[in-house]
Length: 551
Image (cartoon, rainbow, N blue to C red; front, side):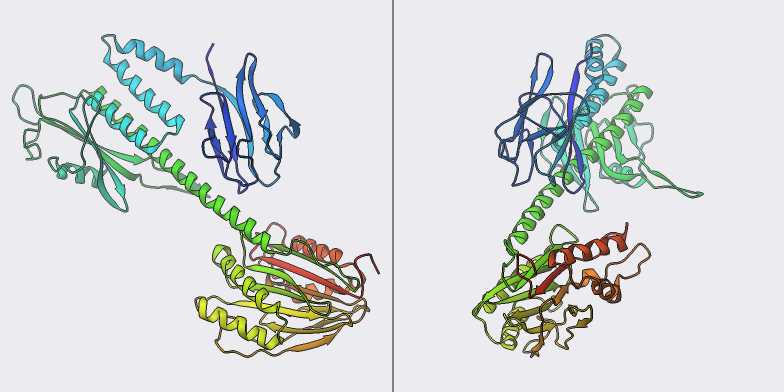
């Protein structure tokens, strides 16, 4: 009976996927760095669960995790695992795992070829080395382990004394590793190799095999390449295989990409490389290039996971900066939603509790998207909240925030901001600094725009800002959104636009703030369809004259 290799297919919240082989048990998983599977999510427990091998197969056990373990959507403490089982860590937007067991053919083959290696048939020994390389490929090890195995295997195959591995780094070919026969590590500062051969193999992508004749002591072609006591050279290009793509009636084939050059030489004895040996060496070079590319991709995936974890932490921090609880009042309702295009975004909203039971409502949209916009949004939010809490005149508030941004941010970074202060009697004083004009939906259905001619903050130093006012009556709504709402595009590139928003809001005059907010977002998603979200979306709705308990 062949042995089996259990595997976990790990998919993160961003859709990235990788496979992990369970080579030993217990196999632990959690966010702590010494787990067999490290999951970079602060909500996952340090030691979340483990997989063990029992008499009848593999089991998964919950190690007292905070959010639990679910197998096929059912929460468990201990459960047997079978191929195809889906494992969830109790967090909807985090990692999902899929368990699989596959028949392992390779170990049996290796065992047979290792037995045959002691026989008089060296071809089987060559094939054994290739299968060992294939096994390393499936294990996806560290890059240095791959490179050492590649060079040592080539030294055995060619019966050479020294192996040099050159890798392309930043467009240049550099000596990355030097090994001697028997696993001896050599320094990388050597100069006694044929640079001509290495450069020619790199340029042409063709192997070179220059060996001294045992009978005459001369090479097949006297080129002056062999010197300094070197009696044989074999050099092989390590290349990614060419890719073929078909587009309509056109078939395109990309050229092989050079990853490096494997250089082997010998000083002490003349040697011979048979046709079979050369063929096996060529196969080894192809396997080696594949393994190197695989290891590099694995390292890149780990780096991407680290960056994604940092984005995840940034998203959590940004979400924590938003109001933890929306204000509750007997004279208005307020509801808000924000959806960044990426893990983090440049939109934010906030509520400031002011003296005399007044409230300030702010919606801001920072230029750009992603991490730079999020950093500026956090800076703006802190500065704005700190100044606004002192209840200064609105024109002075915006002047101070504008000067703060102009002094501390690049000139290409700015923000549009709408800030309005509501009093119990419905007086609404506001400044619109280049933001999408909010819409006032009167109780009777009429829609008015709160326009302004102010510049965005952070754009011009010492700019002045005009303060405007409007009077709200019981039942009136104010919808304040970012341009991610009005500039949402469908699959044909058409904008949702302000006119659609106005028409839709006319029918929302008597709805609660939360209902209006959710209906608008649903309408935007319906309009966009399958088109990707192009900008951060933020929408807040203020319903005056209606307390938290209803009309």
